[in-house]
Length: 371
Ligand SMILES: Cc1ncc(COP(=O)(O)O)c(C=O)c1O
Image 1 (cartoon, rainbow, N blue to C red):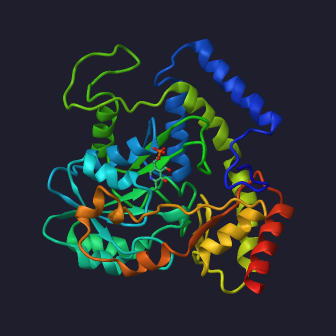
Image 2 (cartoon, rainbow, N blue to C red):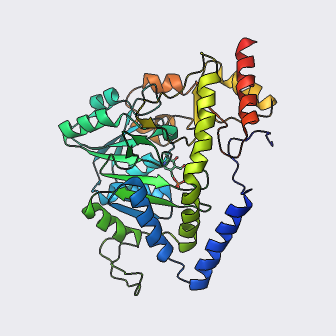
Image 3 (cartoon, helix red, strand yellow):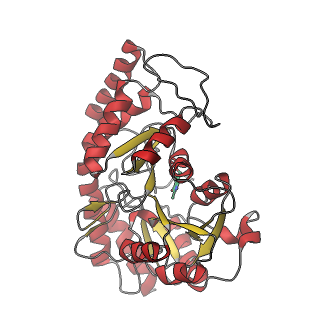
């Protein structure tokens, strides 16, 4: 079904942008360093500067980024990692891929991992808390940090949805031991291919991640690829074409976010009172991956909007601990997650829409609740 107002629109309409993207690919094809070429180095430096972090390691996906972040920081067999049950499945799979055990925590009303629930889940085996910033809204990192410090736990961020999110001028991806970002085409800082990157202030984590990125070898891609394997790993490298496209995308990121934030503010101001949102404090910037609303009669509303040409999405259903594989890790029902998963609806909020479309969505939601 084709919607008048889609949740995502990945086409490139801007002629200038398209020209720059094509030129960037052309440059890579001309120099021929297709793997980990100069564009990858440049991208890593630019991202470190943008996020104010010591090390950035570009990889082939957000999945690789979050996996390598935890693996390189020493998460291993038998460790327990506390994670929200409301998340895209990847960060939980990444815990398993490290050989560790996911321990599910409840969410707060902002749809993020709840520090109170985290506290209750700590055991002798707990090694880390994994914070996925839902839809781009930062988790309660101040409380999480306190808990981690008190219990000597590591923190990881799944920043896949929250590039550009900030608290007191500190960026998503800089609150933890290591973080993983996705820059796949759906993300606000989007590539045009699959891609991601890891951030850390730890040289030790960075060095190990760099080795694991390249099949666990000490290969220097600028010289020769060798079989000098010191720790088995697979290929997580980013190609130069993807990096070159991301460099173009980075230039327009701030402008794109201005538009998205304008639309989000309009929704917040104009949607009726019974529509709830993730709250943002004064010193906070939301990453605005998508715009979730929390509503009663969610399914009826989704149907009504669909009839009116508006696409909506329900993300992350079922909760991870209710999925066929992970139900064996479920220890107890997590009440807030169970309650809110029935109420969350993602509505369109991206830069390819115009203001009249945002007003149209708003009016349709107002109308639905006044029927
Ligand atoms: C929360 C979260 N973690 C991890 C990922 C994985 O990123 P990628 O698709 O780039 O592998 C995504 C992607 O949507 C995500 O939303």
